[in-house]
Image 1 (cartoon, one colour):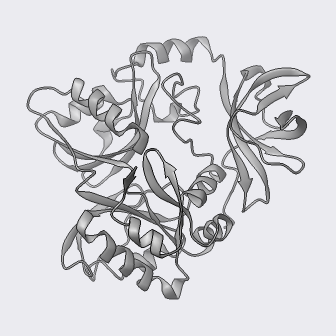
Image 2 (tube, helix red, strand yellow):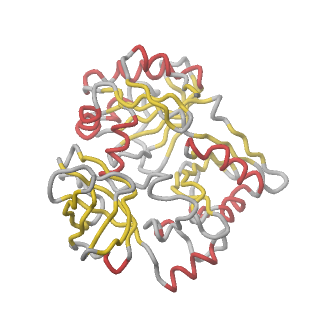
Length: 363
């Protein structure tokens, strides 16, 4: 099992360590619900160094990504970030990824931990001569600072005078506590709250982690683990690879069509065009339980005593205080407001199909 540069810190902090995608990762410190609420109301700090990190450079890098991903890479400006995917020839999702444009034909890419080797092989297979793809996962660490008070914390460890980063943008700067260590800091995240992801040198990880926790004490910062990360993303209806999408799932089925630019050519386009024009055989929906219970992946979904699909992701929502989930169903039974039944341990549990996100922040 692999360990992040912060593994010993997590152990000393009393974190519950669990195996995840080949890594020893913190599931929780003070408890999933407590960490979840800290991110929703104040600020939480996650170690997500298990995720893969690639650098892409060379003349034609943008054109390469235009062909490799379905999103409008040409619309990216220097310093911007874009959610995207890698698709196979049948339109299935190899992985969902994030692109960061560092300059003309210079990109940084974040991929899922479980798919790192698969993604690197796929990207290398399609790599034209003259481009360089470098896996820098082992040389770097990745932290996520998430919550409404995250900027107040982050602002204390970056040089004075930096203005707040715009959504889906990033800066490259030095970090004060790490003696000038360079960092890529992006206003992106997986929680639905204001937040930032920091790519830093692996050797600076412990210093930066401790500095953020110290700077965040007045804001009631707490370290958070994978448990809270999952409940936070589920409340927002964000998909998780291996659950709500895989290589047999297309972006249209996974309700990610808004990230596709059908005006350009890309690997997997033709099957998606046919699916778009013909219609879906299954569709990802969100639902809330109407009674007690916790839906889990694999639970059967019924309507009018017919099996209409399966739960892909499910959990108890700490914010809504009820069971919520997502699942793939027959589109004929996917209308919002429709009542369905979830088979939870042999018990038919009533639920209603709802629009995502499940959690909507009060203004």
